[in-house]
Image 1: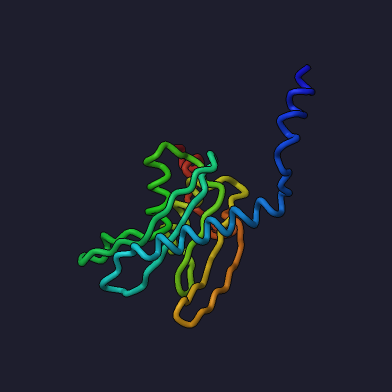
Image 2: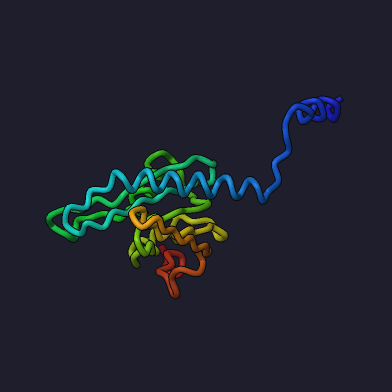
Length: 157
């Protein structure tokens, strides 16, 4: 009886291949990061950055860089997006997209990414220059972004 019900449920739905699902999710993540970049507050560096993360739950969270006249108080887009997810109860990140001219996370962001990323989490760097209509997308894994990261369990924490 259970097999018949599940077969009926699947009958009306189109099966999406893993490859197509990944492409759709990546596109959604990148577009969300681009939208977040538009909200960047960067009057000092004039370097707007947007980021978007997909949490383990499948929910999407965004962030942008927010600068301050006291430069050390600025917060990067990557950390803003991750902290946004954490403030909504998320603890693990499946993927993150970072959008900027020559987009790459700083060292502090790399450490935060590693703290919350799943082992196979994907990082998407989007070197986006809308005025020149240029976009270069690079994919990597969280495990490759920081050699010898601080490990709380090794420190006894």
